[in-house]
Image (cartoon, rainbow, N blue to C red):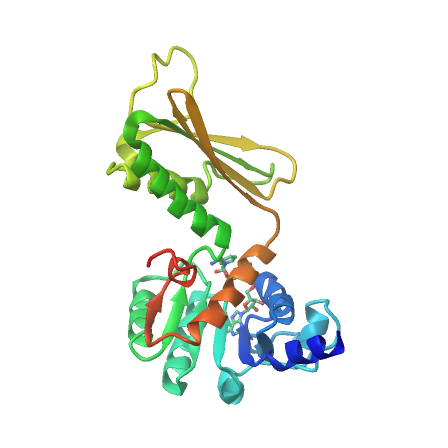
Length: 280
Ligand code: NAD
């Protein structure tokens, strides 16, 4: 038992830095790095002026002291990092990509909302180091998208497809971005353009269902984190593919998995489907 514990500790040899260590995702990432048997938090970085600079990263993440102090300067700790995970702000990530490219440090980027200049900076940095960049690090969502494309190819328009999503009552938009991604995966598998075939909700004298359309429906209530079901309704059988997000930790664990993978990869830009081996 003790031996097992020791060898697990010894295997924690991938040194990971976290940008935005005090953020919602940053705190989750610190916990996920502790939980992963291969990774250890080697540096925690926050923005200049943050009240968290100097604090213990483990205490900030509410997992207890881990003796890694939060600093406000990536360059000062860059030599202690094999891979940098960055869920912060586009402007911050843009700068960090340049620093990592100069110092030969791999990256996992979760920051969303890049403008054109930041996309260009990402492409340039990916010429120098290995980078994973994904808008959604959930293993389940990425797997579901692949399964949906496969199912859509197999059924063609023989199955009627309906996408149903459910979210908490505070959500102000509908349908969800993930529901769109899922409907798009189905349309792609069937060689369709989503905007030509999408039907949002139904009411009144709708007429009979048109072959090849994709129905999309949104449910709102309570504190549901995010559920998505896609039904393939064929003659005589129904296939349902469901994803349920429970907590933000799902994104953090996916990003840490990406970090363990990217340190083994050649220079280039990758996404979460690459990490999961879904593009092979
Ligand atoms: P947040 O505001 O809680 O955290 C961001 C943190 O970054 C803050 O603590 C902030 O102080 C810090 N920061 C800002 N500038 C910095 C700098 N120059 N250097 C170091 N730290 C800096 O936000 P969040 O909810 O954690 O989300 C962060 C980003 O991750 C957003 O772009 C969000 O859309 C994205 N996100 C992506 C996924 C995914 O799966 N790809 C999942 C969740 C969130």
